[in-house]
Image (tube, rainbow over all chains, first blue to last red):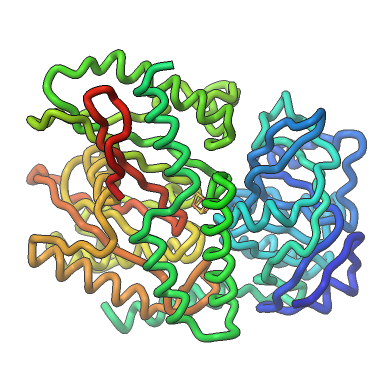
Length: 190
Length: 292
Ligand code: SF4
């Protein structure tokens, strides 16, 4: 297990390879469909949200109010491919070092990872409880009213959040490789 | 609050927080299949831990608590209008308690009012039967796996899929290939051969009410189910698409008549977080027994 701690660095990210298992500690921001479209269309980040050298988590958590703050009840990753039209530009413009999600992303994101020193980290889809346990604190939330709870930007403090590097900064994508291998296995069996 | 509402809230809670036994057994079985030290094995271990944790904390297994699909078998004479109103209240309450995520969005305005109640949510399929009691089955089907579902209109030249069972096999295996890990595999397929575009998908979802280890009573379909399961697990897609031996946990196929002009194969992909539960209700609408 490789330890990753925020703020994340270009060198640190470029040292990672496809298949590495990592444990992330520090700050994460959630952002999913509405946030990506909004930022892509030129929307600006709300005050207090800084994505530079940060990691964006494709996640729409279940969060309940508690003692004047928030408690994360469930927080697994959502499917990342929906953000493919927007991700590369967002990595470049906001200086992201990592994207956490599930299912992998496409060629444009892979290229942006290579160019800007970013990686795609695959969390286990559906593992909402194990991942919620790694969230130690909700530091804040933006766009809650405007976008609704799952689509809001949640600032989370995490400890030992597990993920696997499936797209690295060297142009390798586990998703491309598995697709090609499984396709040729299937052809043999048709 | 009515007894029916209490029962439905409890059904939702249990469906959301506890994976049915047959599914948990299948996941455990697949964990033993994967090579030690692989990322596939790590993923399944995490899934196993997640299942235990959700149950212990009575919290959603997955944060996407999905489309809320009720399948109700009711005696003749049930007041469906009142029943549906109570079910909507139960969904509201289950959402307030965090058993369900605020998960239902107005498709026109994009507004999520946080109640999970609106046109099409929850979806309730009523069916009459001659028995004296009501059976309620509930499936919570997440969006990630729903998005990788697919409907094929045979013949499809590119897949060399003709209008026969071999063509159906090709179509279903193509759906598995295209899905890769995006639907949070290992997955379970509900398939319908025939029907129209709407009934085909509906019937494919209905297959998800079956137990994982049951066998199809129609020999040709049983053979197709076993074959697709075995073949899919030889493709090396694996849990989460990380590579590995477990791509699917089960395949369930049903058939509907079709028009001469149409030949649909509808595939609903269910993620490992296979939330399905059911109850038989007593005369007073309290829960008499659990169906899974
Ligand atoms: S596909 Fe299933 S396990 Fe994956 S995020 Fe959606 S509901 Fe959860």
